[in-house]
Structures are given as C-alpha cells and as structure tokens.
Image 1 (cartoon, rainbow, N blue to C red):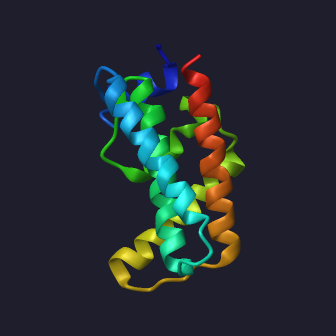
Image 2: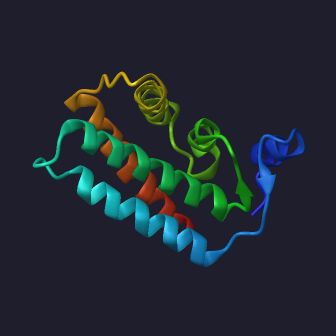
Length: 138
C-alpha cells in the first residue's frame, strides 16, 4: 500500500523499499508479543522489564514498517514512522522516543535510568502498536 510520507522517506534514502514478507512480519510480531508478555512479569528486574518492553516495541514497529514495504537501519526512525504506519498519535510514539534515548544511554554509556512509569508506558504503547498492527491485516 502506497503511503506518501513513507515514499518520501524512501526517496531521500531514509527508508529502503523492500517487498513485505509475511513470514518476517509474523516473526517480528510473535517476538514482540512474547517480549511484551515477559516485560509484564514483575518478578524480573525493572531494567530487564524495560529492555524487554523496548525491544518488543521495536519489533512491533518494525513489523508495521515491513507491512508497508519498507525497512530502516535507524531504530529511532522505525518508531518515528509509527505515525504513518499505524496512525499512532505523536504523544504515544514520543514515549517510545523517550524509551529509545534511555536505551541508548544504558547501551552506550552504561547508565540505566528507568522507572516503573516509563516501563508501564512503554508496555502500554507497545500493546497499542500491536493492536493497530493487527488491524493492518484485515
């Protein structure tokens, strides 16, 4: 399905056009949902739950982008494109932007600064992405 904003990002080499692959989308979706379920396990550390929630959100966001026939090498852009791939409101994908910054801080600087509110918000938005992704398949 053509989408002008995604097409524009493809023309400026921010996204790469690549035919959708149902098995890849299903695998990304399955991975995202499993991670989301695990992120809700309160017996895990907050840092582990955050990592699971963040990676679940990324897998689901990438599945949505792949459904539209694009791929990106930028994790941030995958989240940013959610407004176009699943019509996610800006205030929701900005939660994933915040999670992305916290993830990078932990990954590249070794400084983990997450709280229960961010983890819960990331899980909530990832679940919304999953619901909207499921709606694309109709």
